[in-house]
Length: 260
Image (tube, rainbow, N blue to C red):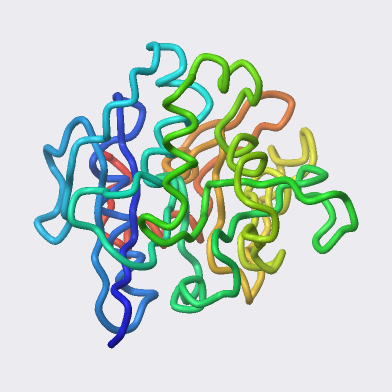
């Protein structure tokens, strides 16, 4: 029997609109074969496409600050039971841009497979000690419930010790259970595609590599910034104007650069 596959994202607060979820779903659908389920854990499901299942983000007792900073709500996907979701799951941050096939991400070896963000992703395949990044990761529902349970037992102490949830995850998973994506599969827009400081005002960002599956936008700029006119980013790492491949992606997946 084929194990069910689920893609999960989270949306809370007002930073990301429903358009982000809808564009992500449409892009995932275009880059996967066969059946899968798309689930958004959210505090506001208004505007989501009907093909997207949605549930509330599980309550974790976080302070308002820790709810917004550090990615801690992501740990709720490690609960022993997460609604009616079963099987292998791919978690995607909302500011992910899908550029290649995703089927292999579900079957890549490793119990929990994450991004290696060591050395700021500057050297693809470099020899720095791996550092977990959870913008794109796979896991199996209910396999490591202790990840959630330990955090909930004393979340204030864990937040103080680990600072962000991806460091907690790497520190608390059993040895040998975490694996990392091939470095070209998940690229950082900031570190791999954005031009060096000030050059972005006169040169367009690079294109994703042919083998890239996901481009991760962490912090600023965000994907929507690249599909609108004007200056984007934070100085001195500014960029200027619409980026054609980003505009094509957004429009092809149902987004509207003028209103999203």
